[in-house]
Image (cartoon, rainbow, N blue to C red; front, side, top):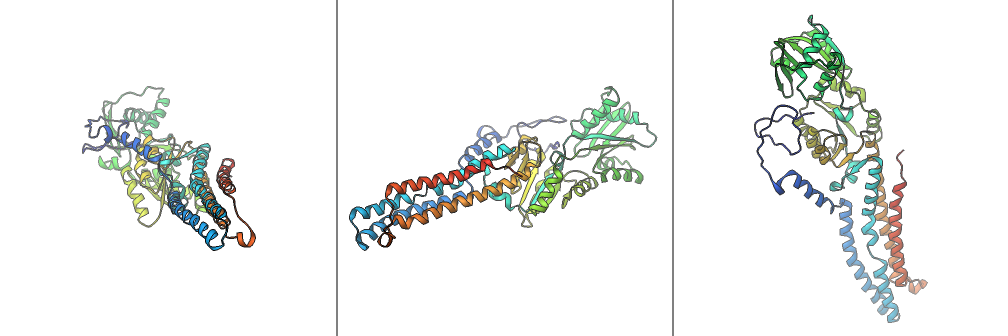
Length: 463
């Protein structure tokens, strides 16, 4: 949905689309200070990023390298001075220790899984962005998944389903005046109203004589000397339009069905209601059920919709909590409020007004059909509009963590098992030893086993 910009020097990002009114802009950042340049810098930084677990393994590998060098010297001392083998054999113990216990498998255990996993994610219809690869570790730990409603849970393409004329106004007159009043508006709800009205009027919708767009409330226009107000209760209240109780009840009936209701007033008198429906996306119920029953996480809707409509949608889907009538700039505060309870939050959204909250969440998930700004803010991008890919994200994240853990444990155990033999500790009693060339082969085989296990990800299919 559009975001209102006031005259108090509100920032405007390059690439923003002006929906209504006009802009007078002063350039405050150029060159390397622009948002675009900062994004490019982020991408460069992203190419060198590693998950937290890999950074830990890298530190361990660094210490392990020094440990192996120490053990190599110890193997020589043990063979030559303690069990008194030939100098050549003591050197073999030392060299075999060096080549057998290299930390190569440890070094590739995590990156190879991440590399294959990111490729698998793209096959399934979502992108794990390299700038925050820690999402693999963070996603399974989230306690709350928050959703934007319009365009995320719903199709984002509202349609007029009912036109109710009131106060003695006939339906055709209501349509004619509303169509003219909304004609200049670029708001999605306005476009839906104009589209439906134009169909009913055979494209004979005229321009208004005057037109004023009031952000967050609606429009005021003059059509054939009639003052027309179109949108919510706030607009009506601001112009001292009294809404009869029976009209409020009628609107609430529609809202209880999950519909959006628009008030229409002619000359400060309520003259009609327009009911719009934005259908839920296919598979949304399945996603909510999976999150609650399988993942045991709390689900939340954050929307600018009316309280009754928002709660009706939440009740229909079985969502645990709903924040309604939330302005775009306040969504971040909602995320912060949830996080203040000690909970980790994943935010799923699609619009420009979701970008800040997606960025603020512990894990940001952007719907690919949404705005570029939202996608830039997200850690994961759903390429398709099918929200069921959210289930696959969780499943793949779990699988990647298991693969990484297994690879690291395998690399450690491989080294621990061969080190005593390479050092010659079993040579006096069992005659066991490893020649350097066989030690090198063993390490190559450990690398191959780690890579092969990671490549089994390519055959994985979500159930």
